[in-house]
Each structure stands twice: as C-alpha cells, then as structure tokens.
Length: 136
Image 1 (cartoon, rainbow, N blue to C red):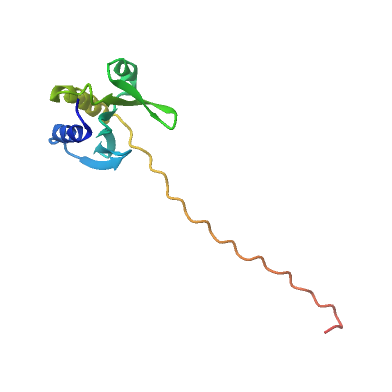
Image 2 (image 1 turned 90 degrees about the vertical axis):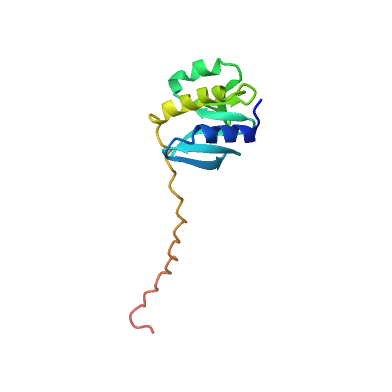
C-alpha cells in the first residue's frame, strides 16, 4: 500500500519529463496541473484522477476505484484510486497515462469572477420646501 507521501513522490517522478506541470495544494492533497488543467492529485492515501468521462464506468469497475463525490454530487470523469491498489510504479503509470491522455481534451476550469463590493447608494435627498409667494 502506498501512503500519501509515497504517492506524491511517485506522481512527481512520473511527470518529471512533462512540460507545463505545476503543483498546487487542493482538497487537502497535492494536485498536479498540466497545461493549467487539473490532471491528477495525490493525498489521503489515494489518487484523484481526471479521466475521460466516456471511460468512467469501466474505470470504477476496477478494484479500489470509486467515483469522486463532493458535497453529495458525483463527478463523472473524476475517480479516486486507493493507495492499496497502487503498489508499483507500473500501477501508477497506468493511471498517469489515462490522466495525460484525457488532459489534451479536457477543458480548463472556468474561474469565477471576483465579487465586487456593493456600491454605496447615494443618500436620499430631502425634498426642498417650496416657499409660498408673499411669505418669508
């Protein structure tokens, strides 16, 4: 069984020859961004792999592989792979290759625009009293 630190080191080594790789702490793990897109992450004694959604059902039939759930929602194309089934560099390479194969097709995440602070409303003007003719 590979623990989190071992998985992170293995993924880092597997992606060493790939250009445009950045590491980013996400979801309590280390995500490996390839071409500014989340490709694979390691942590919590498992991998989180971004794979082709068309192959999702086949992937989750494998031992130790489950669909990623966040806030009760299933994410097709994202799977967790238990560190218990990633025992060798070859096991890891299988998942890295699947992630890299889909990375070129994957869409970049759309960044949400930063919320602008609410504009202050101008103070309401008090109505001006009209003077009646002949009165001061």
